[in-house]
Length: 116
Length: 113
Image (cartoon, rainbow over all chains, first blue to last red; front, side, top):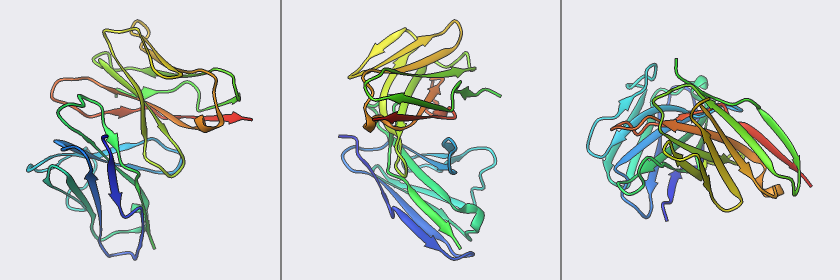
């Protein structure tokens, strides 16, 4: 149980284009979803927290107009990187929790984004 | 600012030995801690968690110890296997309506056969 999937697992896009990453909770209803980014050999950095049906709460320094987050249902959240640049290349990971998991977060497998 | 850090960035052990991975935290309001394992190119995988009202919690081949006096957390892995090779992160949360986790820097565990 508590499986989180992400799609795509990797994506290459050209500078200036936008790319959407999906995060799905497969066997539970995710009341809260989180988006992280991780650079090579570094820790996870929280980008934003989203609750179903509400606007996402972004961490300090994260541009909300560049990283658009939508949490339209209890099983799906999307992260859209708009006008991507090479410096946006990173590993993006989502996580989710439900009412029964307490503060434990279940993580997706991550999406490797490369902007050329 | 508040942070969660690790004493050792890398740890190399022989197969069959016990491993101990350490973590220091500075936020005295933290009352929930969790260990994750991350293999290369994958998302973090839950290992074990502990609340601040406990000093020790055991799982399958893993034990987490919490010392609130010195704000220290450790993960012990018994009879380490090659499949345990990964980066291990500790994370903490301070409760309330805030469900955010703050992650430490990570420790790379390498198990030599």
